[in-house]
Image (cartoon, rainbow, N blue to C red; front, side):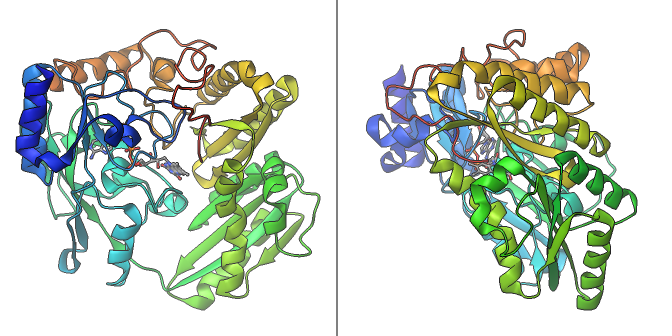
Length: 480
Ligand SMILES: Cc1cc2nc3c(=O)[nH]c(=O)nc-3n(C[C@H](O)[C@H](O)[C@H](O)COP(=O)(O)OP(=O)(O)OC[C@H]3O[C@@H](n4cnc5c(N)ncnc54)[C@H](O)[C@@H]3O)c2cc1C
């Protein structure tokens, strides 16, 4: 049976675009510790080939997992039931339609390339995950990704106006188009955005573009506590100021990137905020930033006087992921969000957790969205503490009216905690939708929908967490 399927896939995409064995190795894992064997990887050239490959898998009941660049932090593209990985990396067509201020992109287009193509026409595609250099627009749509600019500009779902989706039986569904407004029928497009490859495979995306602002102004503001920084953000937003970005780095993060702080900047800080404003009127942008800095009312601040200084201020945030990867410790990155007014309380709870467990928890976050990434650092002797601590952060976020995943998705890592957030009625509806769109359950099995009640052992049960995987890929996560 599987050799027949392989022959069909080779006939569809060409033999050189069907990978097996060692050649398929990099498709067995994502950016987490998770990995799983697979039957084959197919690299179709377009929607028709994706549809034919999915139809062939459907006929044989073979699991199908869509894959962009594999930067998921929740095990999303890991083929947990084996089967066929459909890599979208050859779907790289890209058109900037200036007259309609939209871009039409193949699912495999890298997010940064989409933005840069828009920039060449004085336009911008705002959602900018920190993985923007690597992630694909198809992966961004599948995860409803966010990023640094999303506080002002919104997340991926706010930009998608058209989608081409291959359904579980190989049919091709075309939704929306190059228009910005529609009030006709149910919003089916939104159903596929954030569905993490469990309802269909996105092959083409139409996104809105906005004018590229001509000027930016950036500042760094220090605080004596994370709570004070959180309260300051809440105060600034409530006063009617909407920054282009506002990022939090806590004391533990600052210790990792200390040498990236501006020279002479107050050394004994519990948190800093990097705040940015953008626009077309340079004077207004500067004034607006100064007003925001005043309102934030920190214990020290630095306003960048040149684009070089701006880049330096952002360096501390950008360096964080790289510094983590170079550390001997393993780490587990959370992705919670709470209502903006609850940020100080969430910060207090994270600090209490660190004090009680002895785990080093470093927190960065897109704090203007209430989105915090508390990252648990641990050595081998502390590994057994991580699952319980991570589950406690989930519970705290939910208790404060928040979410366990603001932008990374649920994947396999967080799926069992989904019902605690959404409730049984909503989860029941999600299961019905999955049953309707993928009755045989072949699309990305074991993702998103819970398979057992949530508990403190969820990480310990995932193969590869307590025992390193046979391939020796050791790290728990590779970035935030
Ligand atoms: C260093 C680092 C920083 C990050 N920073 C951020 C951040 O700031 N904000 C943020 O939101 N995320 C962030 N992420 C997470 C990740 O980059 C995003 O989730 C991204 O959207 C995944 O894109 P990808 O192309 O790598 O998709 P993959 O990892 O390949 O897949 C992700 C999920 O989407 C599904 N999928 C992929 N392509 C398709 C498709 N065409 N159709 C249907 N389903 C598909 C997969 O099956 C999987 O479930 C970060 C990750 C890393 C490693």
